Length: 202
Ligand code: ZN
Image (cartoon, rainbow, N blue to C red; front, side):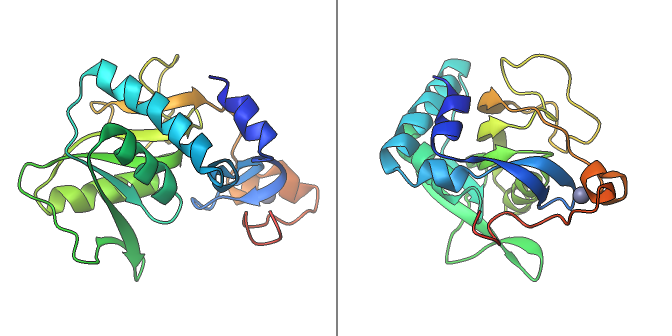
């Protein structure tokens, strides 16, 4: 499965000057929502990811996604794994389980994002699940930005990867491109302004 081609065909690999949710800047942005606007593609990607998770042998009771980015990927993955699906969302900046969702003690929860960059939001969702007594068995995403190490991926995790190294990260591909802190961003130095993806028609 050529994930890069799927993203390119869906115009989901954007080129410009972007401000990521981590606050860092990048010349490229993966707009997974564009890929996932086709439910059949979403199901296809989720099936492939579910296959990888099953082959690895991790048992999952529930998939949990941090809203908003991970919602569709997580829902599709839960459907492919035939398990329960819940999501966390930010309330006053804090990742929280709302809407009557509960986690049973020892419930095996897989955290699913659309893209894992440094894994910050995924880790916050994981912390909330663990606080409620669940067991986080791993992380999953359609694509990995290459800062964290995925199962089957090459190299070592970079220092800015926030995910715990002892838990598996499942992803369909590595998409590696540079990310800059705003004061070191070459695009800012050239005088352009970083935009939040989704805010100006992208
Ligand atoms: Zn910049």
